[in-house]
Image (tube, rainbow, N blue to C red):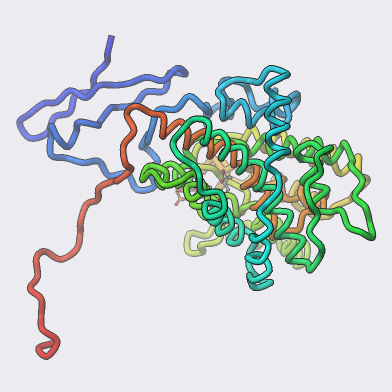
Amino acid sequence: MTEFVKLIYGDRQYQLPVIEGTEGEKAIDISALRRQTGLITLDPGYANTGACSSDITFMDGEKGILRYRGIPVEQLAEYSTFIETSYLLINRRLPSPSELTRFSVLLNDNSLVHEDMRSFYENFPRSSHPMGILSAMVNALRSFYPEIQNLEEEINLTVTRLLSKIRTMAAMSYKISRGHKVVYPRPDLAYCDNFLNMMFDSPVKPYRIDRVVTTALNVFWILHADHEQNCSTTAVRVVGSARVNLYSAISAGIAALWGPLHGGANQAVIEMLSQIAENNNMAQVIERAKDKNDPFRLMGFGHRIYKTFDPRMKIMKKVCHRLLEKLKVSDPLLDVAQELEEIALRDDYFIEHHLYPNVDFYSGIVLRAIGIPTNMFTVMFAIGRLPGWIAQWKESIDDPNWKLCRPRQIYTGPQETAYVPIEQR
Ligand code: CMC
């Protein structure tokens, strides 16, 4: 039986239907609100707004739950690979062994990047941030692979191309930024190993595959693979709603992810931890984060949805310890991070504001141990988030209730004012 919410406005009463998701979350359906009442809703930052129905990812921020297509992220991190998880997100179910093989073969077949794109890389100033380059290059893919139509088969081809080429493009940008020879993908290597080989292989020092590193990277990417309607995913959906091609929608997502309040936090955390280690000023940093008059925030802490531990953070912290131990690496930033976490979790400000470490708090230490340079951290997040963006884009364009995303506003500017000719001003 449908539930309703009563809205009393002026001398009239309206009934707004309540809809319920499979995990019991409820929403007021306001799609007819303006037509019926003349009112719109106002929700800066969309903290109370459900922008779509989705069957991809479930999060419970109070309980610290994250599931992709119903499967707990903890199980995927333990047993799956990034490619299998990508298949799950995009195709709505886990692949059979033959489907997984076919998917891997397709990823391999599409892993090269058009040679002409190399000249773009070579012409970016050396100081360019890799996220700016990645966003531009993904958008540019449309010019090199323009045949996408809204046909299932071509969409699948574009999806595979993107998933495969993004890691080639990321590794290429790193090699070119260092003035080194580009390393091509190898058909005998799986997705993560191929990426690591393209990043770190060199004519004078061949890269040696290390299972420990491969596993850590798989888990890192699985943990980032989707996170329902976050800022960059919303950017992908909004831009995609104008029916642009997939490359442009993903390029918008990459641009949104770059921000330090979102994916850029992984770089910002390492910069903050390094400053603390260098200046020995942890107490001051915490005081700054609590100061209302200071815009500084403790990076890697807090989340719009999680009001308890971010489940991804718990796994990332374990991966971090395991990786450093197995590689016999001692990173002083891990000690700084652990001490900072302990102090913040005991501090009244962080307790009252429900601020816990998020996925980015330990992820940078994992990436450093793998050898990824700090300015590439958010690129690593972007590669991981790509299957989620694609799944969300596909879901939105397949939605029979699809609409162009076009919010309204409450105008607060001047009322009608006559134009004043320049000589009278
Ligand atoms: N340090 C200090 N105070 C904080 C922090 C923080 N990291 N995060 C939130 N607060 C305070 C904030 O000042 C506000 O205080 P008050 O109510 O007294 O004015 C209160 O907590 C609520 O903050 P908000 O900005 O309204 O909450 P939000 O849900 O919009 O913020 C957030 C979410 C992630 C933007 C924020 O927690 C933040 O800026 N964190 C640091 C950046 C970061 O780590 N981002 C990565 C997020 S996880 C990766 C991803 O999925 O993108």
